[in-house]
Length: 97
Image 1 (cartoon, one colour):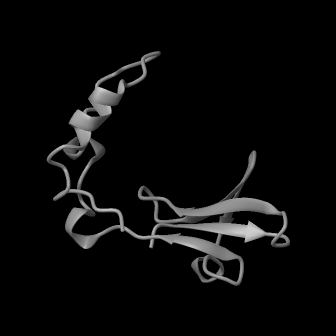
Image 2 (cartoon, one colour):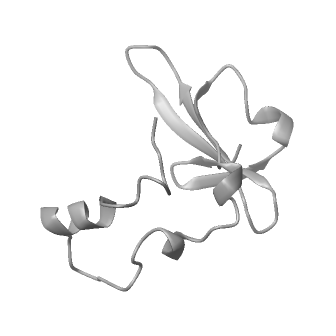
Image 3 (cartoon, rainbow, N blue to C red):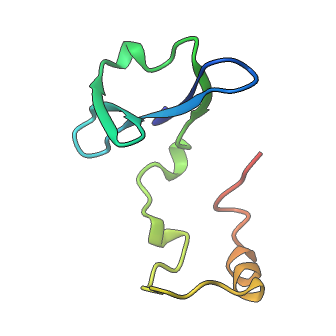
């Protein structure tokens, strides 16, 4: 578990915040708009937890550049063709289910 999205409020409306575990110091932090708080790990998964994010064990030591071209593209978007080319042949590396 490395992150949790929390929903606070009613079903018809509310507010989302996120708890993330730092891969640098292992500390959990709660991100609420412009505010960031350090929190205890026992407070991460509670009744407000909406989506839990996990890292697959077989890719936990990987880096972003192992999966994607991370060369600087400042100010440039990707064309549909470039996105399709990025995704081709990558099904063995990242599976969303």
